[in-house]
Length: 90
Image (tube, rainbow, N blue to C red; front, side, top):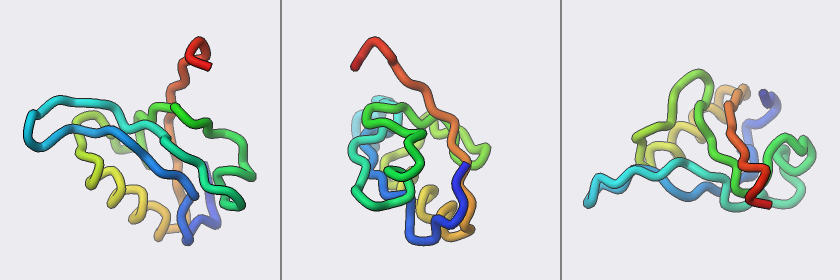
């Protein structure tokens, strides 16, 4: 969980459900921006799969929808994430 995040977490994401092909990919952390809350917290790593955001499942959402959800959550100043990490992928 993160608070004091009105300016965003400082992460970039990749993946999501594709509108055209309807293929589903998870929402993954692509980049962690320097000097933002995500870097000072050390709970997230590049490649982490975001399963839930403030209790809402991200399965089947588009990348654009996931971005909107992250921005709306940050605006409330409370972001709670459930992530999965493949420890063997490092």
